[in-house]
Length: 296
Image (cartoon, rainbow, N blue to C red; front, side):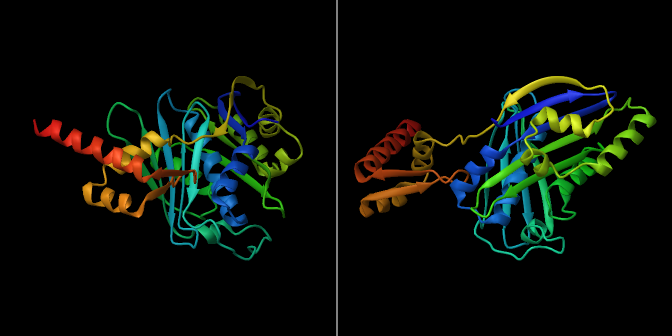
């Protein structure tokens, strides 16, 4: 089953659900994540995709969990086209299981802040933030939506990590009553949410995003809207890295040329870009020419 996200509405309720197993595996592979980091990164990337599904085209958002736990920052960028990328500061942290016998993501993230930055492309980015509740990701996003955006919502996220350090199943959902939802609808919705299975279990059992929504909204009349394919995709390129190198300044570029080569690794996706001394000399030449033009 390809990764995908489905949007739907039902009797005054808006719901998005996603299956993200492949893109979580890609993130794990690129950053060589151990289980706790894999679960934290997978949940964060899935959460970012669910929140980005509400954006307009060309917009994007960044979720950043800045806690005091051993994982450091956990960050994901996503856009409404279905692309996401992300990283964990310290992906190879090992922690014992928590009291429930599950991966201790909350212990890995720790206490701190969740910040959500929305890039509209028109004006300065808008950032909202809230304190982390548990560090388990889903509860923290739910709290952020309530505190910063005054929207009561429910978010569920799950990543099942196999003993072979692969994501066996990953996915999530976002559910939000609309302002005109009747009290009776809210009561039924709360009852449903109180008895649902973990989302990673649903995906492991073969449910697609529609299936997750059907289980969430059992007894509701569901109107399925759109389906979007999802993928791990970074915006980095050799051209972008060249621009970064040219912004270093003459001394730093000359030092790299003296070393005979340079390797630059993208923080978000782990892609490595190699530059020979000749390529670096060409960048220095272009940088010098641009400075001359500015002087004139």
